Amino acid sequence: MMKRLFRFSLLLSALFAVAAMEPPSQPITLPPAQAAKEGRALVDELLSDPPDAGISTGVLEIRHGKSYTEIPVKFQTVVTPTNWLSIYEAKEPAGTRTLTITHNGNQPNEYHMTVKTKDSLADVKLGAGSTTNNIEWLPFAGSDFLLGDLGLEFLHWPDQKLLQKEMKRGRSCRVLESTNPNPAKGAYAKVKCWVDNESHGILLAQAFDAKGKELKEFAPGDFSKSKATGQWQLGKMQITDVQTDFSTTVRFEVDK
Image 1 (cartoon, rainbow, N blue to C red):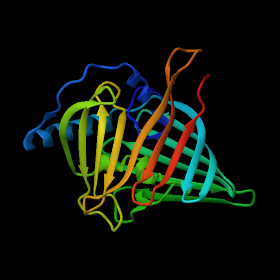
Image 2: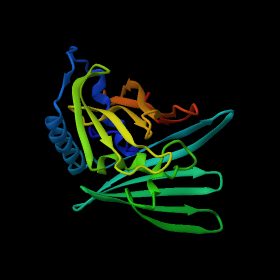
Image 3: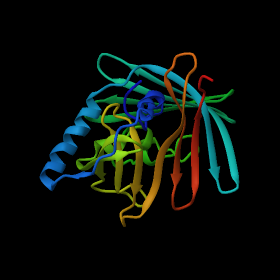
Image 4: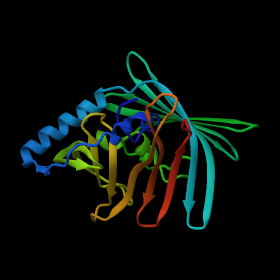
């Protein structure tokens, strides 16, 4: 799975290449017209490039002040001839929550949630993202990951700019800035992310409010090489609410 990051089911391989270090180079800043053209081209490339199918498991570690919660999770990617699905399953104390995001290229994502307990099943089609119902700003399983984070909703915003090309974490990256044309109160107004040139993995992402203050930061980590396969493995990824210092870490099951 050497595709883009920020979708749970893509994470395991999107950053394996990080360990293959490249020599540093000076950042290249793009002029406005070129930034808009190349930003749009990069987003079209990301949205049209389906990921590999696969399943991974792990644990959500949610830290909100003195509160700490662990939730077992499973992440699955299903690829069809016409679209692809990201499926996130969380084993919460009250039951199993399953979020299915249907990706249709440049068309809006579709969100569908089920919550199954021993006594009932709630089945809700939430609708499309980037619309007035603001479903993308709902948290997943009480974590700091919003539904729009998992669906990469910022790639569907109309204003996309490729700010510059630079090295990040030893990798050659393109720095993409996505602007929300009509952010709701407390929602992301802008997202800045570093996209790995080779894998399309997002090595770092920062979300900002309408005043330009950072809201959240996403970063992967804990890379190790599998003794069984020799492939690099992603051990964790973390999203932090910079303003509250709340955080959620996903720790993946990896080969020792």
